[in-house]
Length: 129
Image (cartoon, rainbow, N blue to C red; front, side, top):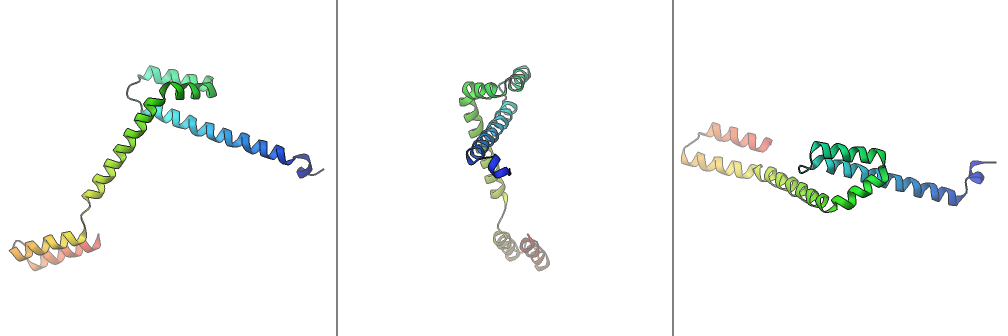
């Protein structure tokens, strides 16, 4: 008797379905725990109670948290996305184009504020970055 005959196709499908459900549940559990620790409106005691609830009754605890805190989770996720977008925009906005650096240095050179050696140094640094 081989493994193929002792483990029919429907059992393979059922095993894959159960495994997929378990992976989805783990993903939701991590999302709930991450949201729980991200909350600023809940006290430490409340967070501990939720963690105990999630450990003792894992499936029920996750679903209860999702039902009771779904609106807050959405708001916190949106706020985190907006903060990340603002930080990225600020970072990208802080980067200056090398051509702009060279043009500003050329203007300073033409005005006599810097000499040719300083201009060349600024140009070299701008092109290196």
